[in-house]
Image (cartoon, rainbow, N blue to C red):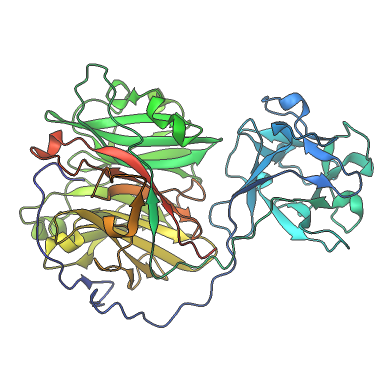
Length: 510
């Protein structure tokens, strides 16, 4: 995100630096292929039908209360018998199983004992809410599994293997007995789970714009999004001629996005003044949500409850000031668009300068958020428009692969995204879809229903498979929340009427 005039220039070669690595985007010749990824889990919704009883797993009376113990009951098509299997962050074969209340199926107290209650509880990142589907062969049936609790290795089953309605669910040793087996008719494996070498998208219409609430906001832009407890939580920049701040809203379905209540974070401890380009994630080692944003520095706030807009702390900075290497290279650009991602050992902070450079700093996972150092140029291009801003880095689910997205300004002056992959966050990047002819996301590989409401595919974020600091995304059926703009709009950048839209991948390999 930037707050000045656009830069216009034609596409030129890109030099990516990881150590002493040079890549040319126009060649797009891949390096030696990574090992084939394992099949990646994808989200699906299904009933769970007991093989012994023919009854369905059921949330009694559709209760939304924490601690409600699940039961079996005659299948009748109610929503309280539908469960959403959502891939657990950073895994290829684990799920959080969500109930109609938006809560998660949970082994009570993280117990490893036989007969521990299987309940619904507010979703969190611990293993007692993660389950594997272990295939069990049943003659004449398909999609039959043990539902295995990751923390204990035990299986969801009716207490004492009973088959009567209202029998409560517990965990018990796994086996192939019919009482331990569930048929999950809606199961889908997600296919090969590999990233394609080219992308096609369909776009929604304009989904979210400013409210008519007297604030005089011109644009809603730079969105970040996570799905948590059955709701989408979106943070975005609010833009007007006087400057920028942040807004938060949440909803259960994209059709509700524009009517969702806006919570302006200048009314929270985040405070007034220049705050823009947010990124949100759950930092599991501390049990805290982090909101990263730019203030002229790289700043962050924390919150134990993402749904409480007043729970954010006042801004703190990752750096005491602009790192010297950025000062030396920024020229007449602007230090923008901070992005944090962590692996098993370290956390990395990426940022851009609107001058053809992508920077990367790092600290240990244990020391985060302190100690960001070793700032290097991770990528650079002599034509600033080729490597402009709004970088995203993600872990690709079910593989040893990372995906880098960077916003560019095209030869037509329109915003679009390029992409690369790597086996490490600080490793060598190989072009994936990185040219105007073969973009990651651009107007020329996006279809619209009717007249295109935007020709810019600009600053946004992929819908992630989880919420935590690994920023894991499924390679299947990707969706990208982005900012778009009326093609006829012009004038002062801060006053442009940016709106949010949603891209859905139409050429998924799985």
